[in-house]
Length: 312
Image (cartoon, rainbow, N blue to C red; front, side, top):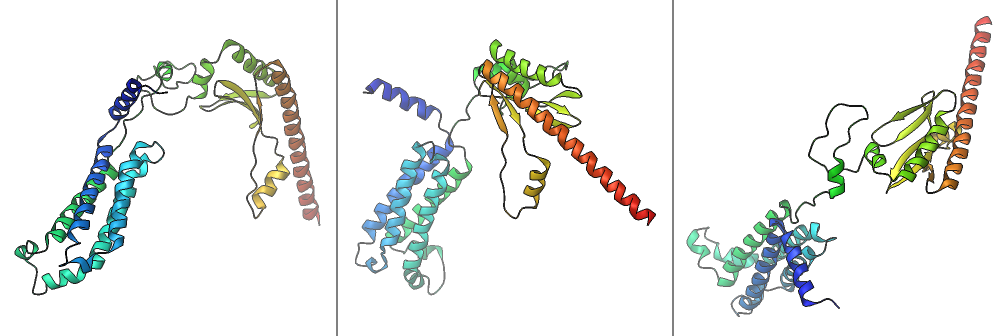
């Protein structure tokens, strides 16, 4: 059971992270509630009861509920101001639609400031409260409702990604972007690094293989095509293999429907996974070699056909 002290502490922590947008949204709830009470009481008068309509009350009550509840839930908080303002605006539209005949009677001879103050207090007060509620709601839509979250201390210690071998110092500012490959690899445990290095060393031992590191991954390529790509996800190195053949790739481009394709991924969690990744690397290198030979064969056939046509 949560103690009273813990509840108070959580409430203080919650309100400490709120910003102006949150309080403007609550202001919409308060103003809309006052407008709802004024409308319900004033339009019970026999003088204007014929202009009362349930839709005005319904949308006003909806605005109060949305503005009072949605800001307190993380999922709905970003949409609270827009939803409450929209509901209040719909209430205002219904207010005008069902009461325009009253306005036509008051302003039949023209519009003047004195005529505004001759209106029934229910109309005058409701109009003022609608303006205030819609103004507060519009402001809440464009104001931040929650304090920006600070990056984790471990992320701050890592700093911004700097390419290996660069003499440039990492800037002090830290963004909310994910860690780049160099940063993620640097904070891996020693055993995880050893598994990743073993797979890379095995792949680079193949003839013509070369390593290329980008911000996202470390790839081992042969003649410009990646045989495998090493990434780090949630503190675990992963080896990605694209096992799609040229024929299948060409068909996916020509197909009338979208055919998704995903990499084959081996997570390096133990020695068995390292062995499996090395075996997959052999398959990937073999596939690239077969595709290269097939491409050479197609070029030779094309050249031969072209030479035959010229001789004719």
